[in-house]
Structure formats: C-alpha cells, structure tokens
Length: 219
Image (cartoon, rainbow, N blue to C red; front, top):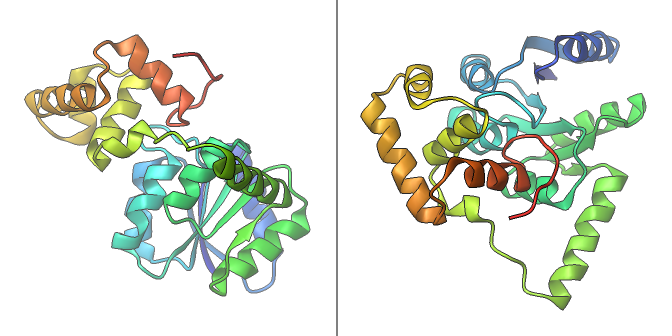
C-alpha cells in the first residue's frame, strides 16, 4: 500500500510516518503540509491512499479531496482529522472521501481504516458513524439547510479560504499565479453569489462551514 501523508504539523507527520513504517506492507511515498503540494504530489506519485488532514493552509483538505479524482482516479482519500462535527463530516463525504478517522483513534483503528479504504470499502470512525446517523435522523424531521459554499466554484472557494486566512488581493494573486484583476473578479462574483459584501462576514461564514478552523460564530 503506497501512502501519501499530508498534515500541516511537522511533529504529527513525523509521528504518523514512524507509525506507518511499523505496518507491514505500507510504504510512505512522501509527506507534505500544504494542500497545493498534496495535489502536486498526488499527481506525480499516484498513491494508493492519501492520508489527509482537513485543516490545511491555502487549500483545505475538503477542496483537496474534491480535486484528487481528476489527478489520480485510483487514489483513495482517508481523512485523519480532529474535527467530529456533522458539518465537517458531511462536507468530507460529499467531497468523495473513502474514509474519515478521528485523530484520537487507537493505533489499531488506523491500520483497519487503511486496509478498508485500500480494498475499496468505506471506513468511518465509530464516533463519526454516530454523527452521520444523527444527521440522517435530523433530516427526517426537518429540511436541511443548503451549504452556501456549494454555490461557489472550486477557485472561488479557494479564494474565500485565502481571504478568511487574512491574505490581501495581491498576496492571493501571487500565490495563485494570476492577475490582481482576476482575483478581484472572483471576489466580486463570490460575494454576489453569497450575498455577502464585507470581509468580516465572509470570515464568519468560512469558519461556520469549516472552510477554515476556528470557533463557531453567529451570522
């Protein structure tokens, strides 16, 4: 099993890599701490499994998971995250991940999850399974609210994340290697689609829907 490891904390990556090295039949091809780099390495290495954190700078894990199939159709994405809320789980599942494992899981559970997703099955941590079931029960009682992020294109979600992380227009343009006018156009379009026209409100929405980490905030 060929694994690509992505987490923005170097110590976490080191610990995970040491752990994976003890699993028979598992090879860690590479590791990285950035969403864009994860996509580059996925395209280059074509791993069997991408072990992916959700809270990544620049391009979050949800967006990475959405883009992986176009770059490496055979790669299965296994999320390893501290987040257990229904919002994060629902977004990950909609993005097409093959598994969702919480970071406080036992060592043995990581091995089971890797084996499951590599064999084409779906794996959810027990705590996540309860979250999913509770979500389905709520759906039977009320109409679920649409996720406003679904109104945006992939590039608009990426720019929204960068705005919420405190990047200015010029910095975003340099990071994405596009013109300032292009970033301004995307920013105007995403604000129109969301009907939000100030940065603080954009930040609150990004936090509320798990695009960037932070404490839940009101509208």
